[in-house]
Image 1 (cartoon, rainbow, N blue to C red):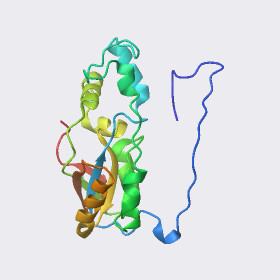
Image 2 (cartoon, helix red, strand yellow; image 1 turned 60 degrees about the vertical axis):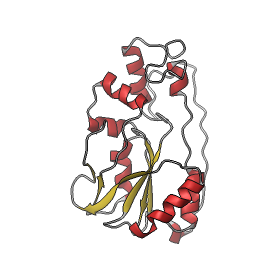
Image 3 (cartoon, rainbow, N blue to C red; image 1 turned 90 degrees about the horizontal axis):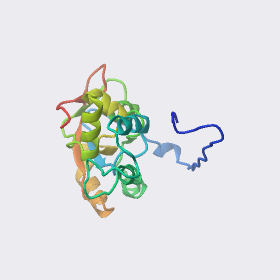
Image 4 (cartoon, rainbow, N blue to C red; image 1 turned 45 degrees about the vertical axis):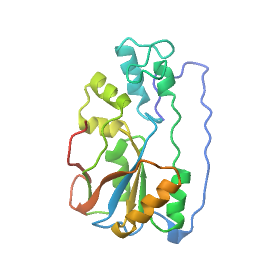
Amino acid sequence: AEMPSMYTNGDYDLAGFSVGAVNRDSILPSNVSIGDILLGLPSSGIHSNGFSLVRKLVAKENLTFHSSPCPWDAVIPTVGESLLTPTKIYVKSCLPLLRAKCLKGLAHITGGGLLENLPRSLPKGVVAEITGHPPLPPVFSWMKKASGLDDHEMLRTFNCGVGMVLIISEEKVDEAKSLLKQSGEDIVYDLGVLVRGEGKQVIMKHPLD
């Protein structure tokens, strides 16, 4: 990770990771094709990406992490508390769909946003047409206004409210939504559909709002 301004001489970072195994015939993406449906799961906030820009914007707006009231959420006392909202983990939501063979692919919307992560699950000649992106959550609306970023750069920098994208065949959508609800996902976005195309693999049909 690139974390400018975070480390000085003598500082260090302790990181951990986990390793899993999967049967070869269960590896995703699998058989992703035109007509497949894209469902989106909400993020819990900024997650862990875009913080170099976030820190610059906080400084630009003369805010502090510890004492400034949160300008995008009056319920949360400070900027810092809001930005430290834990990253949502999607394992418990997605495992039931994996076991039920509902999933053709997944895209975790991390660094690079929707525009760089979703294409990794798409074959050549297939394009994601995004017709149902949700409105920007307040934290991202504030970031957009404070930064002056256009939609393309917002979608390349932040998750913009969608933390996970599921690729599902049309006939499995109802089952998938039912399993997601049982797993506690009360909000599931009908994000879009896969269509034939070349060039850019993610096409936004409507501007972010």
